[in-house]
Length: 100
Image 1 (cartoon, rainbow, N blue to C red):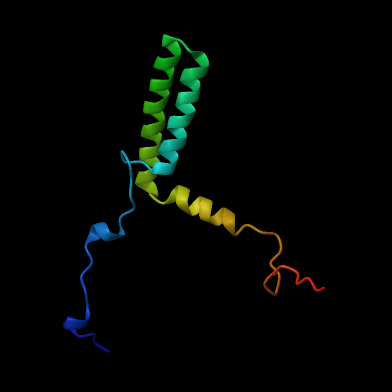
Image 2: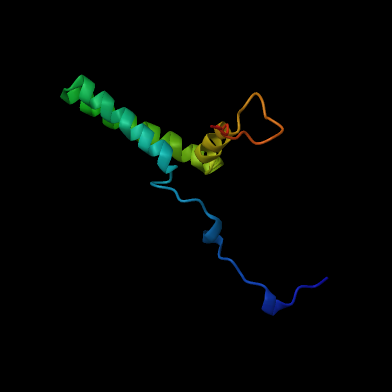
């Protein structure tokens, strides 16, 4: 069956593109930034700040390469953790009904 042209809509390529920040997944970049901030504050010296900056640049490069292969990696991983259960009941689990 042919679909008429007036019933279709053209979607732009960018409508399906995931939102990236500096070429990385925002969740991974935020975790890397917090880790580097902890390193910088725990060492509390010029060497600690330089080490944290170098670590952040290297982690950002690694995250950008990971996003090049799979831009939705972190989101899919976190969503898969929601469904990791050893036992699925046949009926929905409800709160017990208390009677007087």
